[in-house]
Image (tube, rainbow, N blue to C red; front, side, top):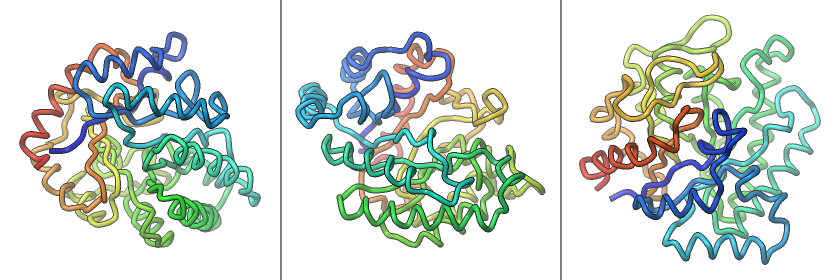
Length: 299
């Protein structure tokens, strides 16, 4: 059976930005609901490198989670204040990545998430080839440094960031060409990329076989999973709507057997309710639904 976690960012950003659910409340509730762990959104008010600068603070955070019988599935690193595509100087990005990487090491977090930072409209300012080269070269350094620390690096593609076409995704993961670097396959993003072609610059690039075909094309390159449904819409015309299981169009009975063909090197499934307006209220419902999927496909 898979170990089940959920992203803590669902309770701190978007609808929860002005009234976030505290870290203590989140982890105690997740333990009560039978989750195996949490995927940390590494920005305030939840634990993050800047608010926990000292090793003893990080040790206490780690022990707090262990005392509840929970583990870490990964870190969503706060890199959104940096520039990646629209600058020739990526040192600030690398410095922030390294700060978050050390945070992973200190807390025992096994994976670090990245994205392309800038929106797909960035190609109005930077040509696609230069943009891709900057991303690839920077991520090569990141993947090597993460590998040295035993932390897996995973890229979450999505409509809200540059390189959101199937061919972009395949090309970048191939060009980074590091065993420690792979794709985070978020099922709702996969649907919006492959079926809707959402926010793709220029000519849309969708796949006849939809999200299942995208998963097949990425087989062997996926090293992390986010599971949630898609209703085929965007949240605020920016990123994929993360609809609770059963409120969307994804056929998980079809998709999960394909995703299971990836040897990701770990046993986590992560639920992602990012930007869902009542994420806290539907967390238990999502746990019930993912447990059903786990019984069918998690062995």
